[in-house]
Structures are given as structure tokens and as C-alpha cells.
Length: 317
Length: 306
Image (tube, rainbow over all chains, first blue to last red; front, side, top):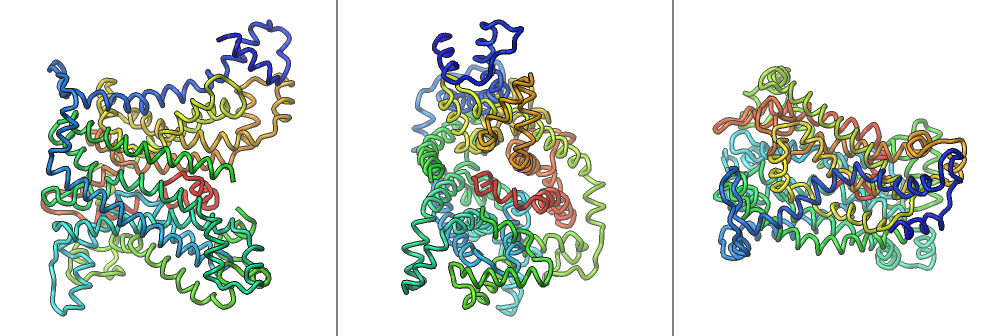
């Protein structure tokens, strides 16, 4: 290994060694320095990210007990086969999929529309931009509480507005019913997420060459045609990138569900991660929860390979 | 980012002359929608998006100044009719909320310190050295960008148990730092690579060691990138919910996001103090954002926040 590294160091001469030190010492330090620089970050990352990834797979093949001294028997794939025979997880998986299919396209569409209207000079552009991005900066916990209040049965804004329209007081318990509870979760997620895709698309639209747009106009092309043939090809990598990141993010939905509905009533608004969390920390069934999370990780891995490819393509352009 | 965007980022051009100049440029360079014909509808659209984005936050601010009777009335009060500070007093004094605030501050600053230091060292190695398995190691770091924190909470909790780090702020700092390293290293590597090698060589000829090159040359020249890393890391640690919820047991070690939960009990929710606490919890992130909007948005467009 030493010779191989030394030759690669030789290909890349930077400076002559300080006089007092021997050539061997110089070679060694030249070799060891990058690893020494990587050590603190690498250690932390390996311990708290990489090891847990493997530990999670590991635990999913046992029945792991939180109490020390209790036997943790090996159970093979039974935690995984349980996933496919668990009616409750079907609801959670369906809710996660529904969440993804509803929030991702709407966030992208609204973000693109907002970016299209706010690109180029506009009075107060910076102000509008800051306002639209503000929900992204605030925390999930806080906005979840705000939406929980807006849709509260007692004193909530939503009920009050409906009362005005129907002419008498209504007391809908939005968060305690499956569809309305889900709708509130979608709403808060879209509201908080639009700003992010907006900023991404705004940066992409800023990068569209204006002279191409202009020459299209000079040639008499209509605005929709310019959008289709000039603008869209230029922002397509961003659209893919945003889409992939939003899909990965949506599959991990947790906090807004945990705070607004808590997955209730009877798990009907729960998503995969709230379900796994409940299995682990309410029922102490860590192994089953780890199996769910591991299976999700495999799915997310497939998505992230796509993500890295898109990132590399973005780097190239 | 191009120059007009930078000029615009404060929102208002300062004086009449500057405004006229800006308009002049705009008419020379019609945008994607042809500025002159579309200006009004674009403004209306911008207003609608802006209003919807800000409304729930303004509503929260308004609620935080309202007495409980106004909060729970069936005709909601949008602008406080009996403004009061009692929610803030209650939030700050009851439930040791001030304590949570200090905990959050300590965790956030600790995380920023460790993340900035460790990711600078690692990014320096990736940017300036050739070594075996370099790109593989780099992609191993990047891979975690696809594994958000919630996904790993179960094994992280088990690890914390083993290391006796449950219920400890240090445990939070270490996990938060580990989760912020990938993006930070990714961002810093690009910036560090942009620093001319000639400069580094002349530094080294003057006898500067590796750490000196990093702290006296590379870091000052990459200040914007380091600022982005610091801001994102601060916001992450300041807002993080799931890890704190899982690891922290005793009230004395709670951070703000899980401290808010104290205002909710089985049957009643103290909405007033809850929103006062929420405003207190939100202000630092919003302040950080407005102070450094330009850098922030640039960092975001590199994929920093989701």
C-alpha cells in the first residue's frame, strides 16, 4: 500500500519538504495528512450514521429487547414477513403513498408557477421572495401547532369561516376524522414546502439564457411555445432534482403527522414512520420497527441512486 | 446567480434614480413573460403567494398577544383587541421555558462548532489531497443525504443507550453534527477547490503547516460557504424534533421544540403560551434568514434544506 500511495503523491508534487525533516517522514506525513483530516468527521459519521444503518438491518433479524439481560433470539425474516401480513401497516403505507402523490406534484406545480411569475424584475421582488420562502425557515413543530389550532374544534379559524358561510355555528373536529385529518396534514406540508421548490425553480429560471428567449420572440414564437422549447429544456434537470428530493422527503413524513393528528383516530392518519415509531417507542417492538425502517431504506436507496445521478448531471452542466 | 438577482435581493431599490434605472434595464431586457404587459398580473400573483405564505405566521404572532378568552372564542380575533403580554410571561416563567431556550442555544452552538470544524478539515482533505479511495469515501459521505434523521432514530436510540448518552445534550450535539456533515463537506469541498493553488504554495513556502493553511488562507477566502454551513446547521439543531423527542427524558434537558409540548395536556391546550413560546422559538431562525438571505437562498439552491 505504501508504495502505491507514494507514487500517487509523487504524481502530484506540491512543495519541497521542510529542510530539517527526513524524506521518509515527509512521505509518511504527506500520506497520512488527508486521513488525519478526515478522521474527526469520519469517526462521527461512521458512529452515528453508518453504524446505525447496519445496526438497523441487524436488529430487524432478532427480537430485540430494550432491557439488558433478556435474551434476544434470532428470528430470521419473520419481522419482514410480518410486515406483509399486518393490516394496520397497510393503512400507514397507503397514507404515505397518498401523501406523496398529493403533496409532491402540488408543491412542484405551485413552486414553478410562483417562480415563473417572480423571475425577472418586479417591484419588491426580494420582498415577495423572502415571504414565500419564510415557511421553509420556520420549524415543522411550530407550523404544525399553528395548523392544529386553525383546524381545532374549539376556537379554530376553519370552523369560524365555515360558520359564516352556513349561517350557524359548526364544530367540526377536523383532526379527529380520517379524511379531514389527512387533508390538514397535506395542507401544512404543501404550505411549508412550496417555498423550497420555488427557490430551486427561481434559480433555474434565472439561468435560462435571455437572448434565446428574445430571439424566439423576434422569430414570432408565442409565449407558450417559448416556454415549451426554450425554457423547459433548460430547467428540466432542476425539475428532476426537485422531484426526487421531494419524493424522498415525502416518504419520510413524520413530524407534522405526529403533532397534528398523532396518527389518529385509530391509526387512520398514520404514516409509515409514525407507525414504526409507535411500534418502537410505545410497544417497545424495536425489531419490527427496524424491519419497517430497513425496508423503507432500501426503497429510498433506489431513489437516492437516481438522486446522485441527477446531482452529477447538474454538476456537469 | 446573476447580477440583477443580487441587486434585487434587498427588496427595494433605495432611491428614485435607482428605481428608474432598474426600470430602464427591465424594458431593455424583457423577461420570460414580457414585463410591460404582464407586470400587474405578476404583482397580483406575487401578492397572493406572499400573503398565503405569511398569513399563518402572522396569525400565530397575533394569537401570542391575545388573552385565552379571545383565543377560544367562536369568532376568531385576527388582530389582538385586548393585546396582552401574559402569554409571554407565562411561557417564559412556567414550565422552565427559559431553561429550554438555553438548552437549545447550547445545543445549536455546540453543533455549529463541531460541524464547521470537522467538515472544514474533511473538505480540505477532499479538495487538496490525492489519496486512495478518495472518491469512494466522498460518496459514502454523500450517501447519507438520502437518509434523513427520522429513518435512523431506532438504531441511534439503541446506540445512545449503549453509550449512556440518552437524556444528554452532548448526545444531541454529536448526532446533529453527524447528520449535518455530509451537506457541509459537499458544499465546502467545492469552495475550497476554488481557492488558487499558487496561494497555498506560497503559504507553504513560508513554512505554514496544514492547519495554518486551512485557518489563515482557505477559511477566510471561503467565508460565505462557512457562513452557509453555520446557518443551516444552526437552524437544523435549533428546530430538530424527533431525536430530541426520543433521547431526552428529563424536563431539565429538553430543547425548545419538545419543550413546546409542555403546554399541551390530555384535555386542554394552553394555546396562548404555546404560541408565545412558538414565536420565541421561531425568531432566531427567521432572524438568521433575514440577516443573510442571499447566502441562504444560494445554499438552498445547492440542495441544503428540504
